Length: 306
Image (cartoon, rainbow, N blue to C red; front, side):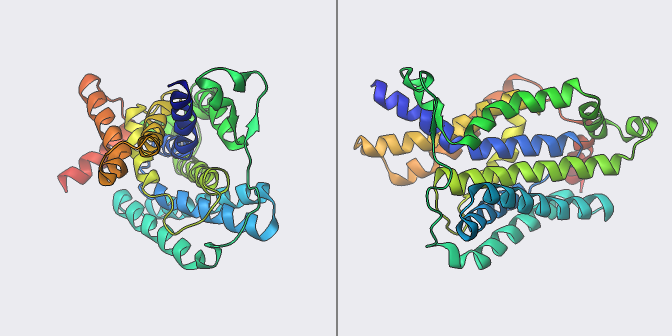
């Protein structure tokens, strides 16, 4: 029983880390008043960029940088279209999601069977990794350890620094940012691109640390789930862990059930992570009033009215 629980905890973190980075990225984007439904595209671009760069250079570090760069690049396109050209945010995000999936499917064909060696291997932390049940949390890759720390770091950035206050102010009222003598459009660019880079980092973790392989569309809806989980996290970085690890835990649970030989429909197992995520969102939406940034409310209301 203890071994099963250990596997579940470890698997939840391993599988959920890529989603966690996506949630972090979307929180930054939505805090400046931009919904990025193209997050899936940034994640799959990051996964492909990291894998291709690692395969070509043999350096996982360069792979991580490439993943962040491509994820941020797609987000920059989204930012330009919705900020400078006033395009519909929801339609633009969906279009860029399919663009990212198409680009990586085309250029990624030659990397399906490519080798990246060891990729980002697990680093075992002495003593902590020997703790029963939760010890698996301390036998992870470097990007997973970074994700543990990134939540508090983003919280500090957003709520304890002047720069973070300006980011949040951009998502609440442009007039406030103008009064500070800054251009809210520039702050939006920063927030959206930073969000895309974090999503790309999540894709990199998925391809060169977790699966250590590349296949077409390997993010498999993780970016879309991350956008939804921002609501569960109520736009708070410290709450991002909850939804991401629920999703990751459900992914891990289906593998455990298969290994234990339980006679469960494979179709039910495949939809389990998404089903549990929807249930969690339903419970939270009924129990508390969501504190949505004011600029996002305008976008949602205009989309509903149109």
